[in-house]
Length: 391
Image 1 (cartoon, one colour):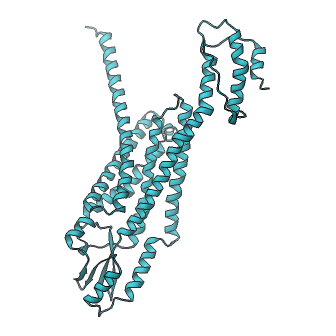
Image 2: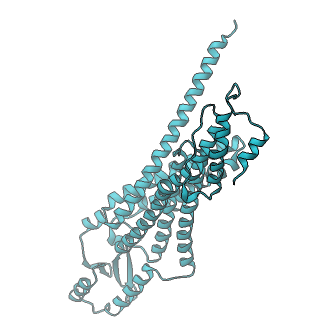
Image 3: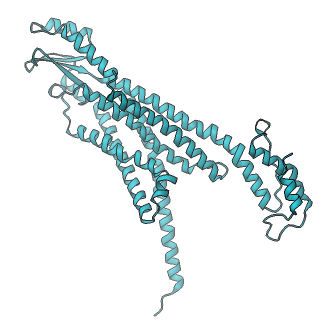
């Protein structure tokens, strides 16, 4: 019994339609995830600036890991799909696959995964764990690397249209991508070079000042009264501990457990390691978060400027005139003139548009005999020469 070709065609059509719907759903999901990760990044910095509870910040760290994992999987899916189709170079270059990579796998491996793992393995009681000032530099470098997440936001430009112009979309995307990438690479490079060249930063200055201030006051005869006096002068001092005994604690363990994580403090040792002083690092983290917010704001302003200033400018001065002239050359009965902007009348686009308005459109109106398909009007060589004359 032969198979009905109509049923086979219908089945193939349904399968193709299902695949297209699946791809469209995935693309929309990626766009939603990009917007959410942008909001997440801003909220995480606000949480550090205002010292939200450790539980809230843990949720943000875990959700950041999930976002980076999602984007890493997305990149691998797109990469292997392009690999199977033999279009890896096209994906990495023309479809900005390098943005997908830079803003996913490196952040997952060097940022969110270690952060989530350290939170999972961390100790919440500040009196039983400690960090180091050296960790501040690592945290700073990681936080600057998080700016790379904003590269994901540029994927949304694929879904932005200016008068249905592929050229406008491509130029808008290229300008935004280049501008944001330069800013991000400058920030990351400055952070790396400052660490390699041992430039002093806020953490170094804070450490030097703290050690110098405490060295002159911490000795074997330090009593409770002097400790409390010192703590009143230095609000960043959280705990004094000598020989395992806590001599001073600014807060109780319940407060520490609620508001402090392993990266929110460090400690210094004195008197051959017998005396330990725990120092609050949250002011430094808040300072770094404020700097990140400034970086994010600058990048967002660059993107918005590309979208709402450069985009319309490009459309009105290049793609719109070209679109009008293309339709006038190819469509029957279309005789709309290009509006010549006096400020840009010497630009090549408007110089050509002026010849189009003054020479071609009168020719088109004079010749009533268009082709049957209406693809283009007929005129002789002298008409072409007149059209190209820019006097």
